[in-house]
Length: 205
Image 1 (cartoon, rainbow, N blue to C red):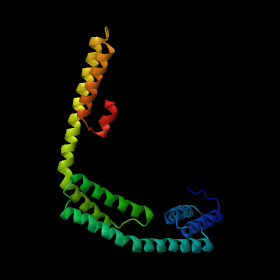
Image 2 (cartoon, rainbow, N blue to C red):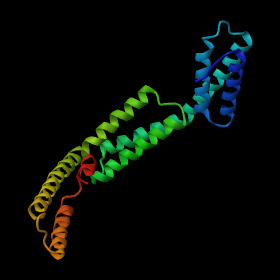
Image 3 (tube, helix red, strand yellow):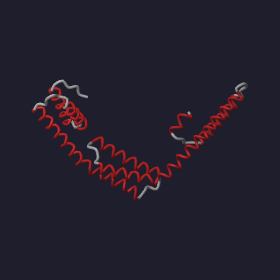
Image 4 (tube, helix red, strand yellow):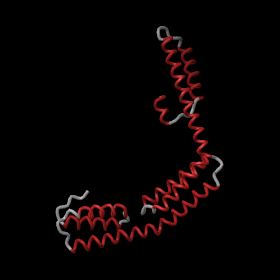
């Protein structure tokens, strides 16, 4: 946030924005410019010189937005086409299908970070198609989720079994060999009920 005392402060910030534009840090430069526009409203009077400077940097910002759209829009259209292919022709292996969707979503996010955000129309298309693409592997992941939940239940039973064993034997512990064999048996049983949901993993530990 800019703490403004005089127009000179704003001139310095505008020069900073221009420098950021020159260095290729378009988003950071635009952020500084937005702060200047906001801060200029608190001034009693904006001189013509400052107004011209603001308009000049503002036009620079718009130019970079247009260039960004020119460069990234075809890439976004390509991502829309790619996710549309996944809708019409899903990958047979659900894990690979899900990974492909994630990869396209990650590329979309990188474009938003590196340049001007997508238009509402582009985003709606990509988002709607992404949701449709997920439908083909939704049943698989729901089944996997149910298996993981059941595994967590079985692991809770093992924990209870071990707790009962401790209570029953704490007055007189079996030999080390017996304990080692028992723990090995419980560990093998535990490993049979994997994987579990991430939220259950820490609780079970």
